[in-house]
Length: 254
Image 1 (cartoon, rainbow, N blue to C red):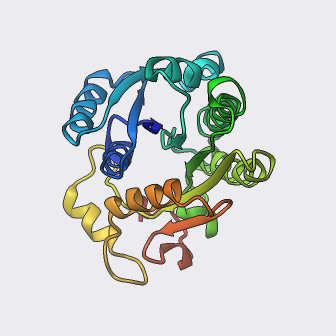
Image 2: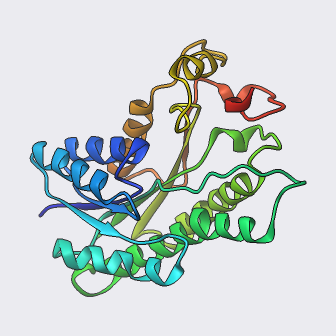
């Protein structure tokens, strides 16, 4: 029997790498996107080239009504309950204590915290009843190295990731034994859209190991947690020790 994995934000960047790495490890992959349909379709073709099944599903994670139906719609398209979920999609907009707005705060919480929680609950429900009864699943939530040593930048984003970290621990307890929940905390592994590559390479090496962390290794860590069925409520930091540094500003703004 095949195993289906839903990757939010699976069309591009880190989500795409996770999807392809999971496919290489034997997962069939559902790629979530919102506006990036063409990129998701291209990634789906890459998954199929690896010999796995793929499909594309759309939802605006800022709309809880769409999130509430995403797992069920994906399972229906796959023809079976989902066995895995990676919450990779994330809203990442800059603010600080002075510029934070109520709407910006709420939108970050909705996309980065509420959506993963709703999707995890739906995955559990799909495995606890009906055709999924008796099966077990795994969830990996993408956090951020900066939770271990925060700075004032991206305040709403950071608070939403703190909330997701707490939710992950609670869900690992409340949804056991049916669903395992783990997290991965990447370092500065990908350039921001439009960022100069040379500047990214310079900044990404500013860590205790004096090397650029590899986005592929983040994807490898995610798949490791998906596949090892004795691990739950654990976090893997793939950051070359960047979390040890006291940074006055976000690393990308240093």
